Length: 300
Image (tube, rainbow, N blue to C red):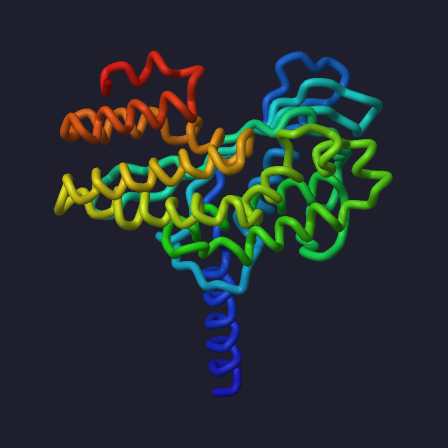
């Protein structure tokens, strides 16, 4: 009887841990130009990154298997610096299912450029929410939390705030000397990096934008299976707020990332909207995404 109880306890404990992980991540490591490093190192790196992202619990929330967030990480190694130091670009994308459909909406699409990290056989990837282990651990933990944060923002007004704050804690925990060497963690490095993305999302000037993300997804896309016009109206209202955010806080990262993630989706969703909405969407998207103005001509 004692053995049966112990077995049941362990089984339930394992089940609890199995529900905790938030991400359903696919990781690929590409090495288009490398010649010096044993290719097996990159196979191990790919495996370790995928295991870390999928098996680490980044929050205290409980996720069922079907609730895990689909995301992709594509790490392209650009250069070898010594035996175990590399530079790379990391492309991140996460999606969210739309209620009542098979469609998945892109929430985050970003290329984190010029990463510098060390990795060798036996390198430990570890989540340290208030500390620093190594640059690769911090980078992957940061992006895991950002993915979780934008996902929560789409389901509840400013629901991602705790996870954005955790991501900001990771930014500030990187030692100054390390941050100066590897880049991406300081505002002086660039105006388009990890530092500025989380700063923007926590900035009060972007609060309305984040509320608009809730309207766009939960009150917009998620109702279209039963009321297309109501969904289109909510999206249109959300887009007006996105433009207002850009006007109040020019050159912020989040509005630019919104355009990258949503431009094709907006064109598809609004293709059959009424002319008043289409004209407004054209004006808004042409304003916040001027480099792609030609793509929105059909809505004019």
